[in-house]
Length: 242
Image (cartoon, rainbow, N blue to C red; front, side):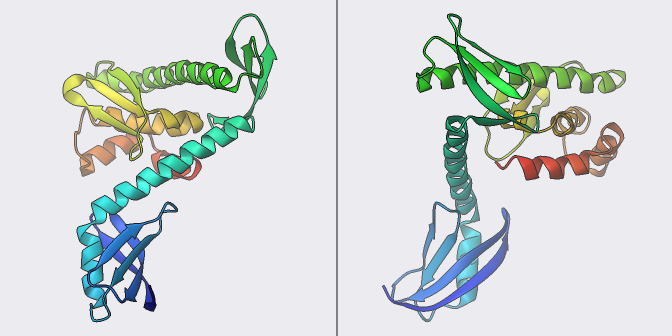
């Protein structure tokens, strides 16, 4: 279909700024599509003003953000699988080489810059991935619990009990706090980040047991409990893309 004109526009939406390609074409209605690379395209009839296209994008900002997040998650899974196939992984901010070793026992261990997977058949890729995943799951829980206990010690004087930990795969947040359940949920992807980044998120969630919102009092407490949280947050968002 012939394109009459093309323009790159950016609009501010409840989900953040969205940049999209606006194309006027010989079509009857305004159409929107999000490509797998996250780029947004809007096509509209010749006489439709750009402002109408902006309003159209704003009205569908939630759907657009969900699509971008979904596509990004799929690409991330592919990239992580590729890295695993290439024998690389990131843990606590460091790159590790994944190696296999023939062994009658099957388990994985972290040793001297490598993740060594002991297995009976070193050519069995599916089994190797399963052993690595099981090890990483247990290691992640161990690290997260250790950080939570460390952070919790700062909140004991405030009367906060140690909460339950849940670890989940999330594509939009690093953690969440359920005060009524006395539970903190952490994103399993954070195991890729340095310890200080994990500590910042855990501290953030503990602060919500005192201030459930993001009020000025909440940030005053966060500044007190984790003075470097701004730098930690920037580093986390730079190293681990959700």
